Length: 197
Image 1: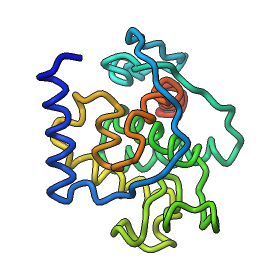
Image 2 (image 1 turned 120 degrees about the vertical axis):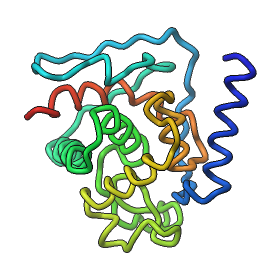
Image 3 (image 1 turned 90 degrees about the vertical axis):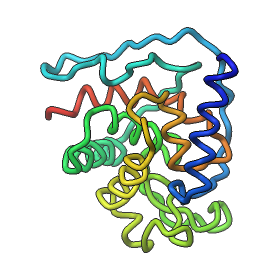
Image 4 (image 1 turned 60 degrees about the vertical axis):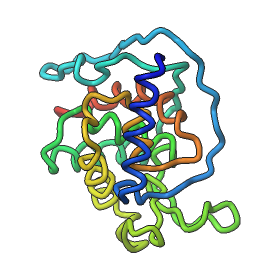
């Protein structure tokens, strides 16, 4: 990545953090190292009406991870898609949201985890009541938590044209900012599969 682009991306993220746009959690997650790789967008879909070029417009960054989803996780992915549509945002916003949730909670609507909890982080996006995301009841409601995430995303100038990990990080302010990128392919596959269902 050239120096000018890197400085621009860091400036956007720093400005968003400094101005309070990114009042989300600073979370500690098991970091999965990302590797430099050529961007490749391969979206598996047989659903008509999904413009796969809009799902991963810049190609994926680094090595991709994938997990098998149970019924609850699939329902949560569908809830994120429904909330994205309800908020009038395009498929790309759903891809960013699902990838963020895959990193933060593996698409599980997490309650308080006791000693394993990172501060007071809850829900699909590990949002924190103490950081102004909402009450514990609100944060653990998939529609509410997705809408809160999307509200933050809409405040990021140019989010549509950013690499996924930069857009997600600007909202979430994670201790592992590059970790979101590894979930882009699975998130795009889920959106392609369920956007029109």
